[in-house]
Every structure is written in C-alpha cells, then in structure tokens.
Image (tube, rainbow over all chains, first blue to last red; front, top):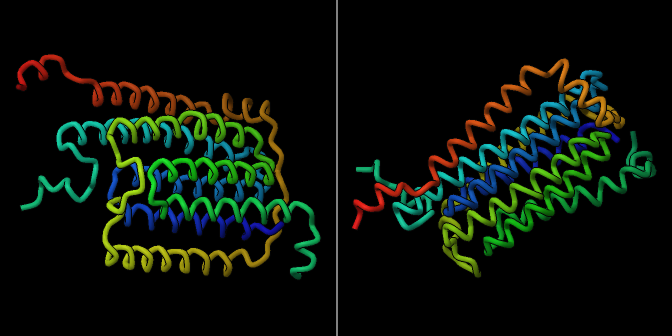
Length: 101
Length: 179
C-alpha cells in the first residue's frame, strides 16, 4: 500500500463535500456535506499516523477528537436550523436574507 | 513500484472495493434528489471509510466511527429532516440553479487538482503499512499523554449539550405572548 492512495481518497471526498456545501439549498443537506469533509480529514489523519508509524498515535487520537467535535457541531447546527425553521418556516439558506438591504 | 506489484498485494483489493464504495456513495450524497437517500448514502460512505481505517490498523477509530457517526449522528440528521419538514420525496428545489452548480463544480475540481497535484508531488509512492494500535493502548494514551485535550473536548461536548437544549427548547413565556 502507498500512502497516496488514502490521501487521494481524502482529497476527492473533501472536494465532493465542498461541492455539496456550495450547491445545496437545504441547511440540513449543507451540514451533511460538512460531515463528508470531516470524514475526508479523518482519513488523512489516520493515513499520516500509519505512514509515520507514530508511537503516540497522534493521528488516530486527533481523528477521535474530530469525530467528537463533529458530533457537537451537528447537535448545535441542527438546533440552529430548527430555530431558523421555526421563525422563517423554511430551512433554505437562500431565503435567510434578513441582513440584505 | 509498478502497478503489477501494487495489485498483487492482497489488501489493495480490499482498498479498491472500499474506495469505489466510498467515492460512489459520497458522490450520491451531494447529488441525490431525495433527502433521506442522501443521509443513507452518508451511512455507506462512512461505513466504507471505517473499512479504510481498518486497513490502516486503527481499530478503535473504526468502532468510534460506527458508534458515533452511523449510530448517533445519522439518527440526529434524520430527526432534523423530519422536524424541519424538508421535502421527503423527489424534489427539484434541493439545489441551487445550474449556474451555481457549474461554479461549484469548477471550484471543487480546482481544489481537487491542487490537493491531488501537491500530494502526488510530495509523496510520490511512499509506502504505508498498517500501524496497529490496540484499544487498550489508545486508552492509555488518552488518559496520559492526551488527557488535557480529552478534558477540553468533554467540556466542548457539555457546552454543545447545554447550547443545543437552550437553542431548540420552546420558550413557554414567549409562546404565550405570541398570538
């Protein structure tokens, strides 16, 4: 196995996540695409950890922290989306234009 | 390393299957016309990426991904979809118009070329072998070397818990004032 085969998967997944963030209108689906980007980062971290044969397993522990923070982010993000839906009766990001003139 | 050498190494067959699954499902997550299908394709993507972690010997990360992501986060997403009454069936209005799609495809394509090109330049065909870290070793590391970030993350989770409750809770006094 070469290290690039894992890193390239991470790069493709990250680009797909970026595409999703830019294209989707629904706020829940944007959060979904952000999760895709975080998964790509995790693949990179674990691949580097294995490539360095790191005794402190820094990459793997970091991946665990990323997973934890992603869970917190989803919780808060969905609460905010819920609040926006309650106030505006829509979860589409292009209808959130209160700060536009 | 030639392609023949690479393909004759058995784990690379697993890699090919998992990579194809990850990429296909990841593609469907961002293009699917059905919200629930997008979430379920994310399950497939994360499951296959857990397989990639297994190839690299990170067994505890695999189980954390399966438990936290596939077990909890996906359920949270489905809950969010139901409660915001996102269009459940096929729906054309999920994406922006084609102008934005072309722009997004160009931007993400450029990003991939940038990352991929620099990766190929830097790591060419450096080998990687699975570095197996047992769950007990991860536990030792978490509670010795990484104990401070571990505690900080637990505080982040607590803050997110309280913040989520405060944000999503209906305020009874406010509800009475509103008609």
